[in-house]
Structures are given as C-alpha cells and as structure tokens.
Length: 130
Image (cartoon, rainbow, N blue to C red):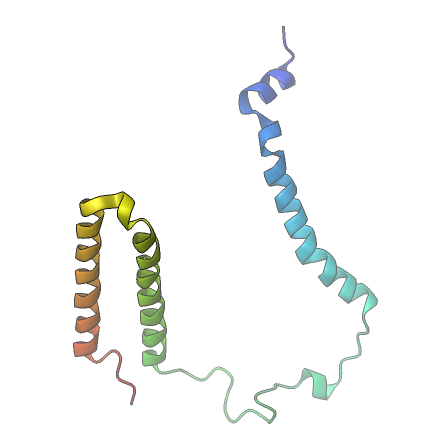
C-alpha cells in the first residue's frame, strides 16, 4: 500500500511540473536579485536635480497630468488591431499548401472583413490627424 503523499504525487505527477517551477523561480530571481543588489550596494544620494522631472533635456512646459487628445489613443488602438490582424497572414501563407481551398476561402473572408473594417474607420475619419 502506498503512503498518502506518494499516492498524491503519482496522481498529479508533480515531477513533470518541476521544470516549469524551476523556470518561474529563475525568472523571478533574474528580475528581483539585480534590483535588490542595486538597492543594497549602489549609492543613494538623491538631490534636487536628480529628483526633478526630465523631459527632452529641459523643464516640462505643462502639468505632467495633462489630457491627451482621444484621437491619439484611437490611432494607437487601431494600429495594434491592424498589426495583429496582419500577423495572421504569415502563418496562413506558410501553411497554404496544407490547408487547401477551405483555408484559402476562410482567409479571403477574413481579408474581406479586414478591408471592410479599414474602409469603415477611414470613412469615419478615425485616421485623420488635424
């Protein structure tokens, strides 16, 4: 008869997850240890110039919490969206021979939706910068 821990380890196969746990621990150590060493070993002599706001080599013009135009965020989100959509084209092109006509037609439908979305945001003026 097996003991409780041996039985539990046999069911969950914890040994298979050891490389994942080791990877997580090493990743945390690589991120935390240099910061801790820098804080402990490095000099800590703050002054007014070091603690001042820095913007392009001169003092900031305005309040650091000023509002940005919403179009800035819109263009950034649209860039990310269309960038991710075009990222789907590469694996499709690589696997085109394997996926056959079904994959070809599916990608044509995807590209049609992509173009319709692009035309829609263009007509709405989302890409215009004034």
